[in-house]
Image 1: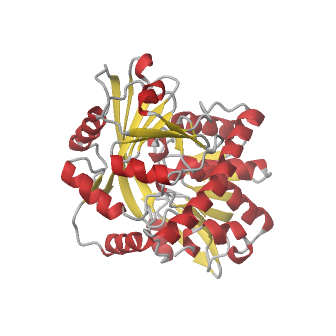
Image 2 (image 1 turned 90 degrees about the horizontal axis):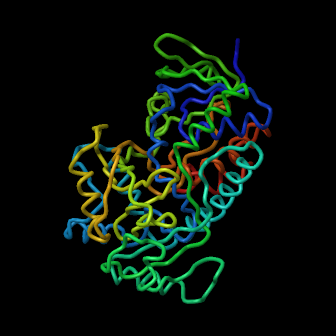
Length: 414
């Protein structure tokens, strides 16, 4: 029997698409190669960072990264290899690291970031979902005086609803474990944070309990086409047919490759450390060490550190050298305290060269949609992306008739 909508991939974007479509009255089937217990979305920092935070591709990022490399604090590792796709991605990334691109990106981040925060609140209120959600801002701390001064110059006009400059003597009120090497901090009040594990498990349980079909531990390895539609998808043992398909496969591009749709996207390996620490030293809210590409997120039962950007790696395992580097960088700017129950994680995020997700309808096959390429911003934008896809499907919109796709999709942003 032909299904209504099949979503391939059960990361946060896939689950959010299922949630939005289910709420709109559609019958949804989710197929995933795992069991939704430890996919990439589980390793997210949990920082909803749509406001007052520069995108990855920003002016000066290359030079700043080289300087950090010389200091031994760089979060970036590029594994040299002859890979046309990686070189193309790097070239596009450098092209997009300019003032005009960043200005546009920040405006879009604010628009869809606010949509996301509103949607998270609505989901918790309407369906009693427990995301451990806190809308209490993001503390951005600076370990370099030059970058702190540059950021301050952007916030000369006081606006108590948007930000608060934290005097160096008061940083410990927000980050009790900070030491005196930190140059300054700004609290950006519009950001929020949550617990990615709770988001994933709460969504899975809600969807399962409300009729969404899950086919787990089954990897889709083939996609067939007939005329202007996808006719079926297949695993090694089963074939599935549906009216519409959403490709939400994270960094994996096998199905897009079969479709001969070249996605300008690269797998970026990141790391997280989750641990317990004395409550009196925990950060009061999510904290970005802006010069180190390191995020510290307090949670109900523990704390998470997230960092590192490895390009060109195919090794899925945790590399102890990277874990040690994260801890060394963190400890340079914090006082000593006891860390217990450490859990290490690494995973690949689908990263586009301009920080824009790849969303929209396939231009050749009418019943195929894309929802991928969110990189580290899966939790930040997944609800907004899901709403965009829902509107496209419910109203049967072409890309050109969907303003959100034209605005926010990397397919239309160069």
